[in-house]
Image (cartoon, rainbow, N blue to C red):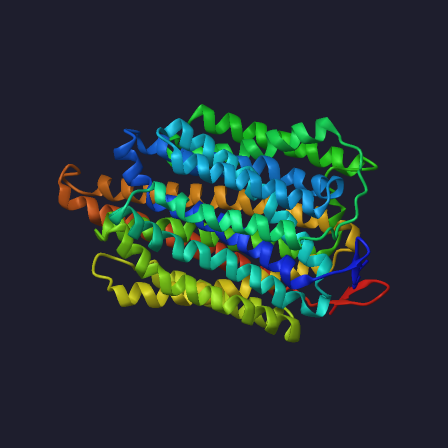
Amino acid sequence: MQGTTKTDNKPIRALPILIALLLSGFIGMFSETALNVALSDLMQILSITPPTAQWLTTGYLLTLGILVPVSGLLLQWFTTRQLFVTSLIFSILGTLLAALAPSFEILLMARVVQAIGTALLLPLMFNTILIIIPVEKRGAAMGMIGLVIMVAPAIGPTIAGLLIENLSWHWIFWLALPVLIFALIFGIVFMQNVTKITKPRIDALSILLSSVGFGGIVFGFSSAGESAGWASPKVIITIAVGIVSLVLFGIRQITMKEPMINLRAFRFPMFSIGVLMVFLCMMIILSSMLILPMYLIKGLGYSAFKAGLILLPGGIINGIMSPIMGRLFDKYGPKWLVIPGLAIVTVTLWFFSSISATSTIAFVVVLHSTLMIGVSMIFMPSQTNGINQLPRELYPDGTAIMNTLQQVAGAIGTALAVSIMAAGQKSYMSSVSNPDDPLNMLPAFTQGVQGAFIFAMIVAIIGLIVSFFIKRVIINDTKNMYQ
């Protein structure tokens, strides 16, 4: 059905469908990242500890890690309209519940409900674009997704900081609610059914193994990164159970006639490279974007609002560059974007590894903006090129694999970055004569942060080596090739 012009006996109106999906995705990403700035306030207001507050992020990631793998199955069981409306209803209910939340328990429940909406929406958005957009224009369309995915997190902390200073954290959700309601109404009017319903057999054991596998890994790494530490039995057991479950899940999918996720997608070499590039890129983005704001606020003493303003230019630049990179991808292919992009990211992270209390705001803004330009050259071109090599019947599986591993990469990247940062702090403190001296706190924190950026740089170097194997996928009517 590639190149199809009709669905449900009606011509496809791509623009209204894109508007509905992108608007919903934008608000989903905004509310996800905006709350991170409010965590310190929430700890005081709700009288909770940092590990407890972190569950507002862990619970969200855990829900995504469990539900996104099932999305490939859902895309083949339900229509586009059904999934869109259901995802928006969950997002609206979760946002309303969060806006009214009087306690941590209610807020955590709201975050899980929000995550259910996001878990349904993200794969639907990618899969729909793959169907309604011709291959030669797909890079530009995926670039628009990149704009949404990156600008929302960029402006989220700034707006959240402003709301917290002048109103309260509840207004993060009150601000998002009317936009979600508008997106739902807009989607009910304009959304069309573009997917083919095949209703494959539902295998309960596959769903169980997937949920335990991805959920265990996300939970284990998140727990290690928060406070439990790598030696904690909880961390070791959950990661081990997760790995064993995923191995069993993989074996079962390969041997089934109708798998829940068709892992045969990995037989396509550019898809496999695309998945690896997206995985490494998400590790770099999320580890850096956790460590940098933390250092600006806790290390350099900036307010949440000021830290958000410092990071705002880079996020906006990334959003602007994403559609541009999408069009360049359509014209030139991935190699001439991904390789220079990873080189830029590697060099920028090397400069970031020298960040200290004497670093100026201009230094941080320029480096962060440069990092975001590099990321825009890597993420969407790698993802689009990989998906392009798949036959149409594997689109739901390809998008489910990509989106699932993004969540796993986020959990692993942030956990490793936080652990390396903590190890750096501990190492510094063990080398000073008086560890209890408050004057040693900032140098210790700085050494830890520098170590975390070196870790991100090493990940970027691995990505740079892999990027030399990327080739442009050429699509024709009979088969997908690459050059």
